[in-house]
Length: 420
Ligand code: ADP
Image (cartoon, rainbow, N blue to C red; front, side):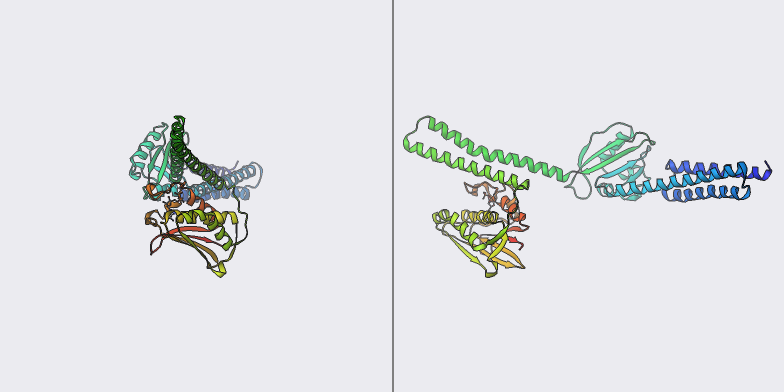
């Protein structure tokens, strides 16, 4: 082997070692991302250049084989590096798109990664990278979790408020990183909505139990009184009370079942052209006895362009009936209730206005919640507290909206807006 060829082999070996070192550094993640990609390119180029030089100068025998294999290695390495950088870009895209916060520390407790969600939750920015977590994390519970995880121990999750909005609740759990040089990873989930839904469910169960217990207790009491053999007049009165409470329970169960069906989307719209006047008249006929008992009047006003609409007639009837029934119940004797339909920007607008006590401003949106009552003492005896929740469901099923407001002259006004 002549001196020139040996010198080339030596140069190739040196460049090969540098390339290998660079590749090792890259793969171990020891260099920051930008210089790494530049060095990767340089390493690939150097290896490819030396191989090309061999082919050009020696061009035969073992030297050619060596050069060809060096070139192949260079190409393979450059492919690997390309894959690596694609993987990294993919991982960064996934992390930044995640709603969960991810915060990664190396073995020394220096921040390696903090995705966008974690930046918001922990109130830090990307300048946290490379710093000790204790300088960056202000929350003592999270710092304690990270310290435990860095010691390689498992940690129990914590539920805590984080970020600027202290009404939001997060589940934080840190875990040690096994292998890959150790360290710790903290994952943060926003559980505010989950907690809220859980609370609503608990309240609902408590409300249902309470609503059922009241009539049941009354029924049991009067049944026991009947067993003692009261006189005929008392018997009649007790039976009447039992019947009233049974009816209340029956209504409550019917409303609950209806809400459950609506929640499960089991009630579908059966739309057809409807005559608004016809629906209004049917509701007034339904409630005629109560209206007469209270010597009230229901005044109808249907604008000429609001005579008809395509809607589910039975559901529209239930909506109007619920609102008029409330108006009748909450208005004093001899009151006038107005039931009107008009057209506004193409939509059908139905209003039910009364002269009752009205609704406190702070309760105007809450009255559509299940079992929400403005004033328990003022509640009508037969009410279930579910009527307006059903109304809202039925209106929204039609793609419409319902709102409550107070009239300037006193009393409440409910407005249902239905798209045509
Ligand atoms: P309820 O069976 O108790 O009437 P609703 O869901 O129909 O249940 O109504 C919820 C609450 O909204 C009522 O308990 C009452 O406090 C209030 N409310 C509803 N309609 C009226 C109205 N027209 N005037 C005053 N308050 C009303």
